[in-house]
Image 1 (cartoon, rainbow, N blue to C red):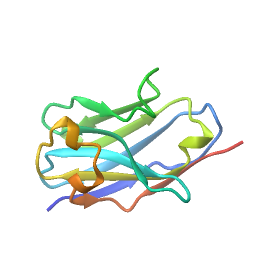
Image 2: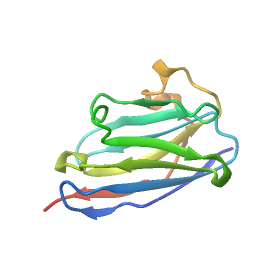
Image 3: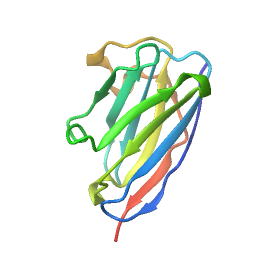
Image 4: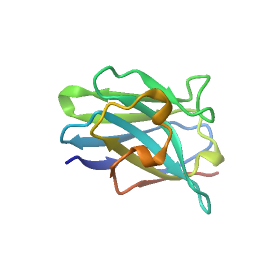
Length: 126
């Protein structure tokens, strides 16, 4: 059993930075972030295996270091550092985990994950 508690969402201006946190309780093989924009489906943002910490990103956030996923094993916490935020980054961000270490090609699939946080709202608006 894995429990996830997110924090860090809020209202920011375009171009601002924001860091989301997710406390991971229990043994997680893979952890990640998805987001759901208003009126749209939930989409993959980033993920990593808890053991090796190698990040995998969606094409929408990859490049220019806009988003960075990281974890602190000692604090059992995962982070999503978001820079140069745009209005299209607005949505509810969900922390997710699965007990198994997923292969990279499975990380972007919502159905690969068994555990979800409650979600935290991120609004990017001027």
